[in-house]
Image (cartoon, rainbow, N blue to C red):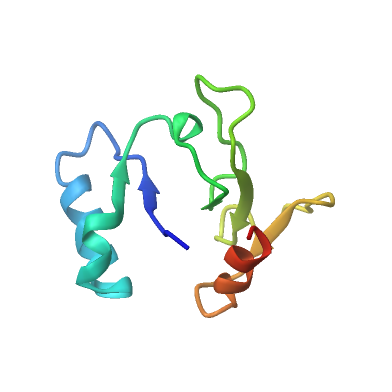
Length: 103
């Protein structure tokens, strides 16, 4: 299974891309640095899953190819998801099982 990290940089903050790369290296290791996709529109990225803390991802593609799995964060933990929507509470959860479910 190929895993990529798709992230949208904050335009008004010039250090944002650097900080995103530093975060990925710290939490996932240097081997994941080649797996980063920086894009302002995640809907145009072709994938099976998108794990993201933003509950409302919109963009050019109205029906993205991926299933959105909501990553729990302070700004979204109050949201109740309707099936079949799924949530990942933290990176210590079994995120690999999510990948396996798409095989």
